[in-house]
Image (cartoon, rainbow, N blue to C red; front, side, top):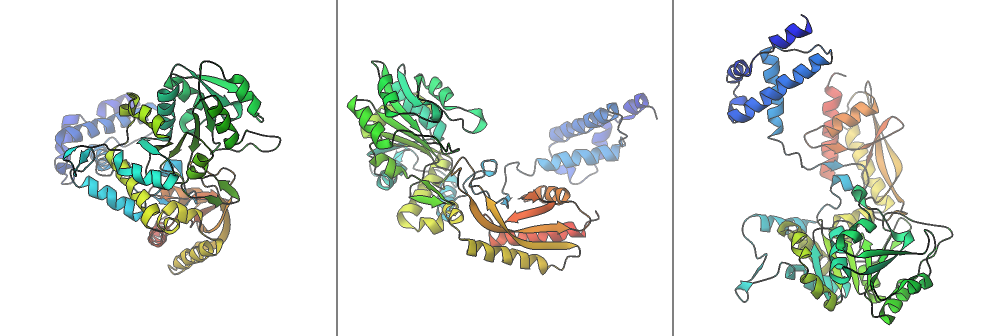
Length: 464
C-alpha cells in the first residue's frame, strides 16, 4: 500500500474509541484521557509513515499503543531509583537521601495540618523558621539563622538585604558557576548589588581587597570553591584576614560555603571546613546547602550575626524564596540526628562518605555471592576495586576508594544490560566500564542487592 493510501487507512478516533471500549483496562481511564492518547498514537503513526517507516496502523495496534501511553499516567515520573553509580551526592538522582528520622518528620507533616506558622504555646501566629533556628545556632555557633529554598537563593537574599545598590568585592578566582549554568556574578547582579572583581584567577592578595574598598562598598564576599580546585601557584587571603579587614572598615564579610558541613570532615584526602569553623574566624554570615554534605533536603541555610539576619527577615525577597513545609520538616529531622543521634551512622550521606574500604569490599562480596546463587546461565560477576567522586558540587578533590561488582551477561552487550536495568519499574542506575556493567555498592542497601539480583535473573531469562 502506498504511503498516501496508508494515511487514509488510519482509523478515525471514533472508530478507535469503539475498539478501546472493549478493553477492560482502558475502561478504567477517563474518556477524555483515552481520546488524547489515541490521538497521540495516530499522530505517532503518521510521523513514522512520513519517515518511511513501515508501521502497523490497524485499530488493535493503535489502541495497544494508546494503552502504553495511558499506563504512564499511573506511574509517577518522579520516583525512587537504586543508585549503583557510587556517587553519593548525585545531582541528577536527588542528592542526599534522607535519614529515617527525617523521613518520619516529613510523613508526620504530610498526613494533615501542621504547626508550620502557628505557636501552640501562645495560640498566635508563629514563624516557620523557628522550627530549626535553635538547632542551627547550637550546631554552628551562630547568633541567628534563616532558611530559604536553596543556597543560590540564600546568597541572593544576603546580598539583597545587605548590599543592594552597593558594591560587593569578590576575588576573581572565586567567581564560580554552579549547576544549570548559574553563576555567582549573575546571582549578585539579580540581587541588585554591583560586582567588583579583584586579583587574578590564581592569585588574590589581601591588598587587592583593601585597595578596592570605597565609599560605595557594601560587603566583602568569599566564595568557597566547593565544586572545583585551583592548585599550583595560587593564593587567597585567609578567612581571618578578610574578616579583620572588613571589620576595620565596618563592612559585613560573607562566605558562600556552597556544600556546607556541620561536622569537621575529611574524606578521600580532602578536608572540608565546617560552618562553625568559618563563623569562628569572624565571618558575619555564612550560607550553605541543606541537601549536600549536611545530608538533608534541598534548602539554603543562612547563619551568622543577628543584626544582619534581622535585615533579611524584612526583605520582600524572602517570601518569594521561602522554604516549603516538607523540606523544612526534612531539615528539622536531619538536624535532630546531629543533636540526638549518631550522625556519622544515622545520616546516609555521612555514612556513605565515611564507609571503610573493608566494609565496602565485604558488601561487594555479599552482592556478588547473591548473584552467584541465582545460578543464572551466562552471568559473569566479579568483585572489583573502584574510585568514585563525591558528586553534587562537593569535595571535588576527594577520591573515594571502594568496591563494586562488574557484571556481564552472555548474548547481551553492557549497553543493553544497562538500558534494561535503567528502564525497570524501580530503575537501577549503574555505569559501564570496559564493556561491563559496574555496580558500585557504596550507595546500595541490602534490599537493593535483592532487587539487582532479581533484575538480572529476569533479564537473563528474556530472549536476547
